[in-house]
Length: 173
Image (tube, one colour):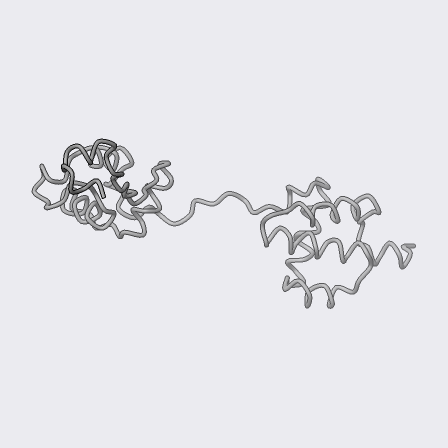
């Protein structure tokens, strides 16, 4: 016959409690934190209804994560499975094409500027490859490529050391 203590913890041990407590301090993702917190509360013997109320997990979800954790007893089992994600917007605009167009001079292409802006590059890529791309998407893709952009810093000219000689006696004052 099962004891009340065993029934309350659902197969979680004191070692699991310590491991889940450490994981709460180290985990960075909110979903994994919530799952580890739910299992820790369950290991402490808290009622399932209270745990689902505090963590926002459903009852079936709590038991699903408990079973997954008990199979390996590893915190990594609480991570989300890799997903495909949303399909790429503007698939014809590849990373290589973005880099190739960035190397080109916008003035030589007929634009009235000497440097690319994200909005101008997005417009150019959309016209060239017949596929619209938003500035937000282009910024994100450029960030993934490791590209960074900063506004140019203006460097003010300092007074020349021989200025007085060049201007004559009037500028000496």
